[in-house]
Length: 87
Image (cartoon, helix red, strand yellow):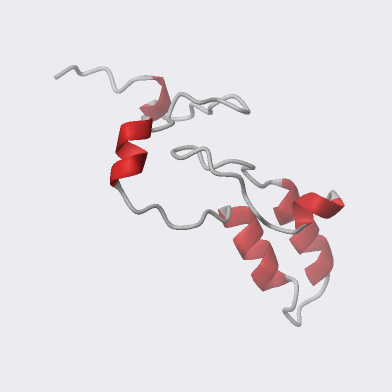
């Protein structure tokens, strides 16, 4: 075992958009039950939108704009409807 955690475990390291460096191999994905993917940003936005708080729509829009479009481990696309309307 090495002491080097690799680039994706280094504090402050951020994968470039579209990076597949953490994507699991197909044989692992085929062997596990992977739940449907909804990004944390879109999931939270969908909860904020109906909330009775000031500027809920604005907050939701900002959250949707931060969506990780694909799951970094499975590559599955986020199915949120915001991606159809360019939120």
